[in-house]
Image (cartoon, rainbow over all chains, first blue to last red; front, side, top):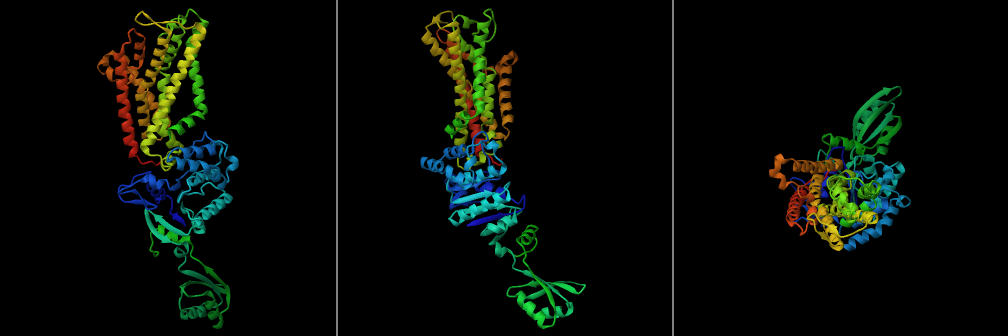
Length: 288
Length: 264
């Protein structure tokens, strides 16, 4: 499962992640990770955190040490012996997963931002986490790097890891996530699969020669509503139709043509996640 | 965590530059005396090196005690937590998870270990260079009698141990300040500031009433090891005072850091 945590800057994404990972303390409430309480009654944050891999905001490393040594030292810092040696044993594997094996011996201060970002992801993966929490993981990556990271996360999710990715990039979340939560001003304002959040109400843009005839035909069609009529501009006018569930562009076309209206263009317009997102964030009354 | 801390220090160029610098300081008295046999004045025990190379170790320890050692303590303890915060590694250590109590204690232990290594290093350089230049012999004490070379060596090791312990309080103060800020230089300066103010107050007779409670008051008491018999009271007072400072500020560091929101 790949979960996208979407929100504009300042919505509280990082704050939420910090609270979940026991870095900052909420004044009230309850946090649970993988069934283990992190805050609230009977909390044992260590037990939960040991099963989590995380990258919070930018990656952070000891810049005077090599990438490999950074991972080794993080592996050695805590935990039972078995856990430490398991992590140590995975160092080369996670370096390879993020494509850093060639640069692993270089000091981190010589790394580019993209390389540091990858090393951050490698660190998060070191403990074979059941839950992977990544705050803006594609920050600073070039398009090629972004693609690689997305594919890597997809693969991890398919292999059974729960991946929680925060982002302010809609396209990214839309392209890779199974589920999206939208955060605005500290509140979860919508949640669901991206397809559900997106176009319930699709639109159809139709170019016709006769606005009046088209208008009367459309009024008779079930599930189709006229939103805007523009024109006529020259020989054609454009109608923007709201297509409710069940309505199809083919039917609209057939009805118009059989009524003698000439249709020169028929363009379906999906309401993008961006529209939904913006309306949610601006606090308008988009459902859910 | 403790061992990782030491490995980090080991692989840091800075550590070895410091070691080199300290070696230079430790060699200084011997080199000066060797080059100009008439030199006088200087730090405690300085004049005596000519008669006995063992004194070079004591001079070196006395030389680093008021400035270099508090500076090193300030640097290491000041950056202990704040350095991780500004490097962005603190949050990754905490979610690893390294418990907060463990992190503070491991940092403190690592700081003290590095300081101990520095003092021992300086002592060894002093012993070696002093012995090579002027030879060893029975040590005259401040009380006028002499002690055997073996006993003298033991007392020199004792004074090194005392000087290490004398930094325990200051290191705890540094770690405490380090939990308050994400600026390692800030924490370092504040810690060194504390040490300097303590030494200034300790030299002002107008505030004699607070002298026994000043952090640096007992620092020079190691010279009492070179009386015959050893004058223990100042040494024990110094150790007790340091223990109080160390416990107080380590406790404060644990309390503050345990409840601190880590947003850096």
